[in-house]
Amino acid sequence: MSSEATVLLHREQTSVDLHLCHLSEFWGVQCKMVHLGLVNHPGRMLSPRHNLSCVMVSARTLAAILQDETICQEVVMDLLKQTPFVLIYGITPGEGETYAVRYLTDGLVSSAVSFDSSEHLYQVSSLKQEITEEFSGLTFGPINRERDCGLVLNRPQTGLSDIVNIGNLALFALLKKQKSSLFLLACRDIADVQSQTNGSLPAHKYFSQIVPVLMFLRCAFREKTWHNPERCASFVIDDALLRQSYGFLNYSRLLAEMDSREFSSTIAFIPWNYRRTHRDVAKLVRERSDRFMVCVHGCDHTAGEFASTNVRELNDRVHLATHRMRTHEQLTGVPYDEVMVFPQGKFSSTSLGVLKGHNYLAAVNSTAIPYGLSDAHGITVADLLAPAVLKYGGFPLFMRRYPGELADFAFDLFLGKPAILVEHHDYFKDGYDRIRAFTTQINSLSQKLQWMGVGQLIKRTCLQKTISHDTIACKIFANIQVLHNPAPVPKRFLVTKSEDDNVAVHRVAMDGKPHPFIIDGGRLQLTVDIPPARTIEMKIEYASPHRLDKSRDMQTLGYHLKVYLRRHLSEVRDNYLCGHGKLISLAYRIKKTGS
Image (cartoon, rainbow, N blue to C red; front, side, top):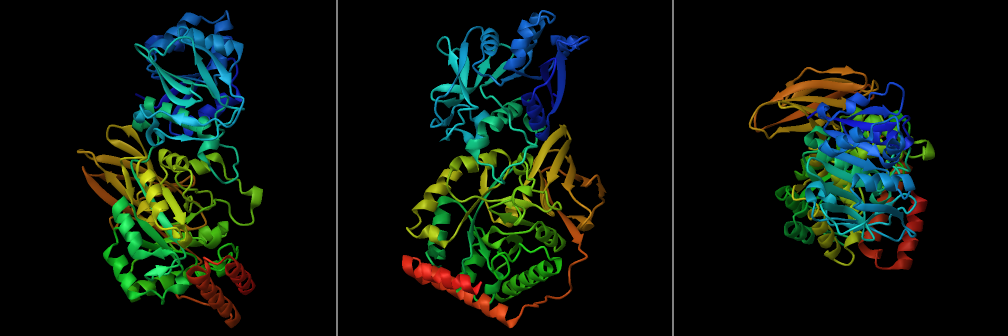
């Protein structure tokens, strides 16, 4: 089965048709548009003997076809009844659309209705887990009543399965016929993947515009669509020192919870604290590296230290942070991942290029918008649908979320993104019940879910699709990638990665051995053959013109005094004042004057 869908159009395409094609093509499915109702239209392509595997048509187009006397409706209907996978999208209460859907379903669906309130929720079936995957059984919202509709049935369900409901009416349903699986989607629009966002991708806002279409495409094309074979998660805790207790966080208690609930944590460690780790906690982290990992959290953790656009300043900060982390590893034996978590979430697009030149693995952040760009950031829906944002120099920026809406993490995992949770020590103020409950919910989303440190998680994140029985296309995001062939036969991997000309690729290695590659059209490309049931590690090394040979610290004494004051006031706040509202407000004011 080829990964090509046929989109039926009546004379001209609409914006919804174009949005559908762009979303499908983003997910690796090419769309062939067939225009009906035009002079010399290629209606002969619609003969069932052409064995089309997938047809998508809007309810509006279907209504126009049924009203157009120049089109042989019987041919079209026979095609829809015999094609293995059919999607009818854009079903709304319009009279023509209602008639078309009623006709196609032999009267089972009588109409579509709008909702008079946005207080309704999406209810995803738990009976079709092979379709709904991570969303199975979830209820969340609110819906968008301007966009979402419900299907009204004429008689009790016969062969129709609700996949997503709103108020006991199907938004998305599957009608099984003798030769066809007919999917019905009662949503007015499909997301425009080329449109600019506000930098976030909440599940309830985009669910009905994206997820049902992707569910359909995965049913129709399986592994011929882009997908992540892994399901990975990590819990990141910002700022905490490696001492037995930091604020409300106790490492022994956390370890007990991680062992009990099967999750792992990454400590976003401030390099300034590199000489302040307690030996007992270092020993605990070393011995339980299956549960504890460490990554880099800024350098001095001052406000906006990575929001600068001065390349030399940024280069010095990355160098100093790396030097401190390496010294910390030598002193304590605690390894770290060269993954940057930006203090207060502030970064510039320039800082990502500098990190890339230092061969950092990736950055992890709670916002995708560089500091100072405001509405000019240009981040699109497509940028956020990918596992990592690659908009800035091809350096991967992975998004993380605070524990809250479970559907948001289901959305991430469904899209092939890792589930990265973030919190601070005060999340444990009332004990460990909250993290215990939320990680249990996260674990319930997928039986394949694996918890690990953010570094390992990033190395295992990619998108793959099957090209042929022995060839896999693979999109990677970071400069180190674990490539796995689980099959009992050799596989050829066609690997691509987004690159630019600002940071040159010095070499590519497979398991430490140099490997040939080309860069063409802004993409690094290579081919690697992987034996049966084997895993190899691919590593890209960059040659940065900005990197220095020695760590430099060019800051003034006054700056160092401010950082010292800031760090110690933060610890006083976290360890002693958190339970006292007035005192902590005073500490924040003092800290602000010292920053």
